[in-house]
Amino acid sequence: MRAVLDTNVLVPALRSDRGASRQLLLIAIDRGFDLLLSVPLVIEYEAVMTRPEQRAGSRLSEAETGIVLDVLVSVAEPVRLSFCWRPVLSDPSDDMVLETAVNGGAELLVTFNQRHFAVAAREFRLQVVSPVQALERLGR
Image 1 (tube, rainbow, N blue to C red):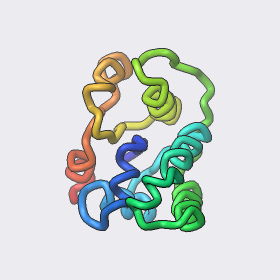
Image 2: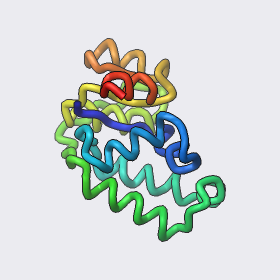
Image 3: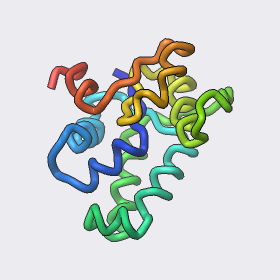
Image 4: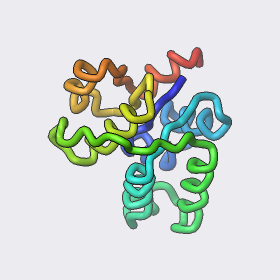
């Protein structure tokens, strides 16, 4: 399975050791599916996860957060954004996630904001799913 994780999936994955988001993160690190990442998406992950309120919620230092991001980059398949699809969605951050999914040939875009990606699901025939639904697709 080829998948892109929206930033809103990574946030709870680092804040709690329970839940579908954490399970997906661990499966991605174990290469249980093909995690797709682009440079803009990694920058977005870093910008969000190093905010003071996010670091406090995750109880990770900035350096520890960097290690987590480095591990994700090391196991991910890099996606070159050869075609820009902006603007398609109302939120530019969502467009960045969509571009990674479309350019990377993702089967799944995993997000808690499924309705934000409704247009993308129709136009790009992309399956937009929650973390729980992604785990179900993985048979977990």
